[in-house]
Image (cartoon, rainbow, N blue to C red; front, side, top):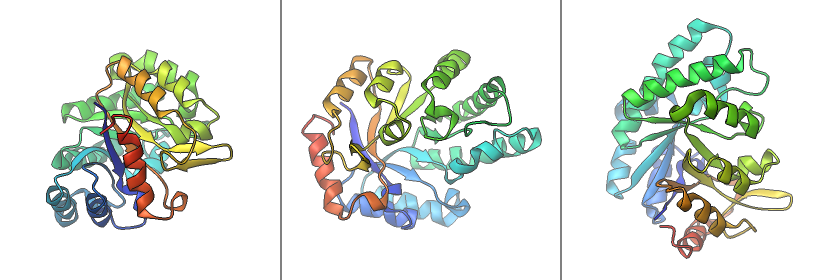
Length: 261
């Protein structure tokens, strides 16, 4: 059965530990932690996040780096030394993920028109994957609009280059914004998808709470379950796309009726 949760990002700019606590108060038992500052990766603030997790008995399944918007600069630019230094820095994310029991790290990667070749991108991503694997973390490529990963063909080439080291985070809203059919994307990469960011959409509106749009979540479940999907459905919404907490709890109830829990 697919686990159902939500991301602390839903309440940005609420501080991360408070956002996780709020998810617990709303009855969520599964969460993604979106780190938002350097100090949250260790010490007192990481411990505060961990305390809230334990207080509500929550399972943190994934983490999202706050540096995702700058990965093109720090990891995938022509300056090799900066890549090496940042590779070392990402060990902090792996350590923080392990402290929370999370096993997946979500990557945006390079933007379109990166200053390195695709082959270099795949090589560097592979290094990051292997570094994460050594610490028990699955580094996963998310499909993101305006990034290289908005292209299905790019993802196919990446899968071919990385082989068994290719893992994917399917994000429904990002697929819609990229002009892609989320279900078609799910079918194409069903064997490599390890995590899903769920949201709903209507013509001209996306990033809605599940149940407030027209997306066929049952069909998505069927596609993934046929491939043996063992991951989670995590709601990653933006604060401007819902007005009340009840919309999240209603979205949770909507998905639970589809036997997602």
